[in-house]
Image (tube, rainbow, N blue to C red; front, side, top):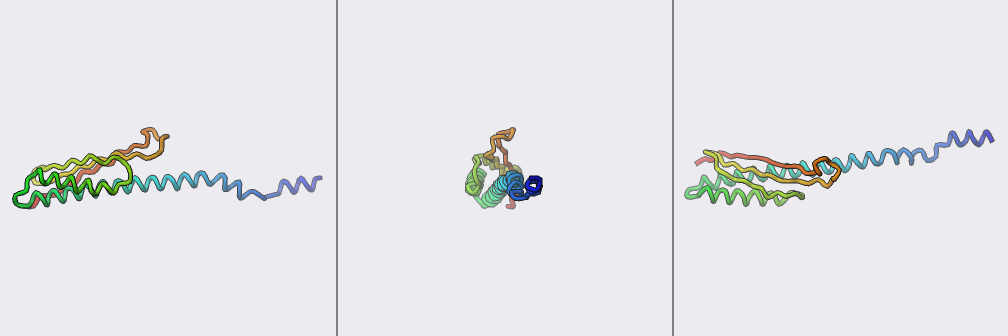
Length: 137
């Protein structure tokens, strides 16, 4: 009887499974968190690229002879919105192009919602960027 009790105490079968059950949820949280952080960073890069492309296009159009500020703003908005079409989720419809002296400025605002309801702000982030390019006549 004592032999059987000693055998049960020193039995290590199932140890790996129990350790795996403890470590796996933490590992899954890190993987999902990394994926979510990656999508937010990707969308921020898209917003930056949209503002840069819009400002560059607006500055180039306004530098042409006979182009108005309205034409440049319209083309800059179209370019930024086309670039924003690559964003993964979110409401990215707020593009504000304007001329400021010798510069052409484009602001892009994008509301991005992370699908995690337990966050204090509901998982909503404001991704913004302002870009300006010098107008060379």
